[in-house]
Image (cartoon, rainbow, N blue to C red; front, side, top):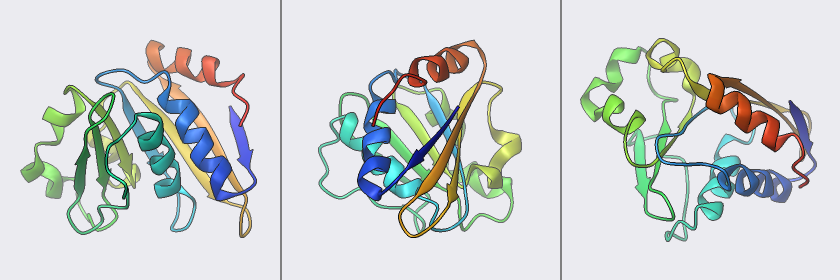
Length: 154
């Protein structure tokens, strides 16, 4: 499934729509270059999960930020990771199968550590405002999520 958002606000609204069906233990892997809208999408997911923090930004320098909301949000950013092994000290597996939702920016950097089942979101910069966002589900739960999102209007 593919969606083209026409401005950052639409990308946030898409994140909010995605968050509506998320449940404990869900994993979202975000792929895309710098400026493709990954953090903007996460802001929408956080808003939809009713995250209490006013500021949701990229945790590039700390790798992980945790937020409380309807479900805990574990926001990872692996931009500065060169090898997947560099994540071992943060307890990634505990978060992946924990009580909240994991959203992983730069998931390509840890691809071999991803579980077999997750929602993959590819974000592509089209121009100053527009982004193309593709969703692919790996595993039954995530394939069903993609089907539910196909009818989402933003």
